[in-house]
Length: 501
Image 1 (spheres, helix red, strand yellow):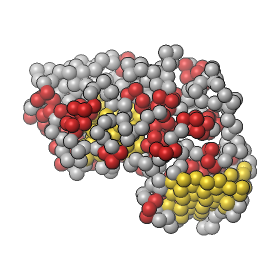
Image 2: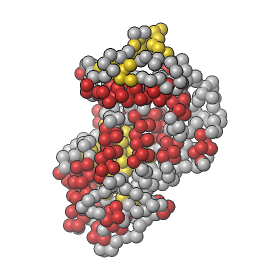
Image 3: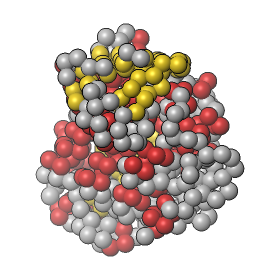
Image 4: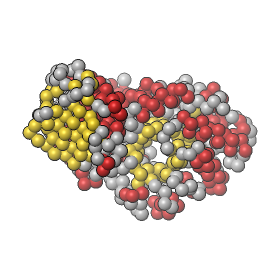
């Protein structure tokens, strides 16, 4: 198996001494880099007698931590009224909804936050200093005070080209949570498949979901399954953003409903990987009804504030036709009291106040794009930095290379605040790492392409710019490997990282 072979092969050309995963200080262990961190000579022993206390509003976070410790160490840690690991919601409002304060002393561990999301992020930091080793362990002393740089720290997953089961998506969600990712953008529809049940349009799943790229059996999420995925993500403080791609990437819909085609003829299922050829028929009443029906159902299933309307790679419409469909999609989203987000091409349409632009295509001149966006905020996903389906190097068997080869340092060494001239930090909502699945068929493929690059994007989204340091990052990244090994998480042993042997 490809992934298994690559996992067993250490990255050749590693140019310095591997980092030990055990005994590292608090400052040297944490990823993303905290806003403020100090170390001390204190040590706290984690034993079978350790208990975790959590407030009424965050008991699930306490149970999550207990389960994580049991998995890593085998210790029978449980929650209780009083614990030597104390989670509290006594944090100051200045920590915001996602910030936290962590202290490890000889007396115990305390994580303070203003909101449960902050406690959860503090738990992820604590998990990173707990070695994967059976039995009692000693935690390094110190304190962390931490708040995120950007509100949107995202990853997207394409379940349309190849379909992924609920369990596979949940596995990816668990991996995202480790690094304080708070947004999962699900690419639910494309030419090759329609992956969400729309009860007013049953043929979308009867016909449009029956295939995938290469001719597989496809699949889809029932509305109950989608709700369960959303809840699973919510429990890990991750917001799901569903994407219904328009006007293009729509062949699965065009094969399901003939009236969406200008000639009234249903299209054949599409099993290849070309782009730009498909589009719903602009200006047709059937198209307007379809857009309204689909977004109404998707919005009703999605408690988060955003719905993605797609908008990229349309080659079969005039500019006016293109704009009319984008504007129709915006209206449909707004009618459901949600905020629309779309790929950067949507700046060719009249954008509603609040609509978010997702930047991805570095070949477009940034000046006209920024001007057309007006006051819109941006989510930044430059393909040559953040697309996790790009090959690491010419020898990588999975993935594509149209945006170039993307090694770990390529993913890490850029600043979201200076990427687009004229767009300062205040207009950057955040960053997102997409992963497209033309060549990725299962969860192991996805994880192998995501790790170790995804933590680089996570650090750009969370950590202050002043902490940006490649040498520090790659050493802290190397320390993550024992955690990934224990979790059976597929990853690429990049020669840029001093992995433990």
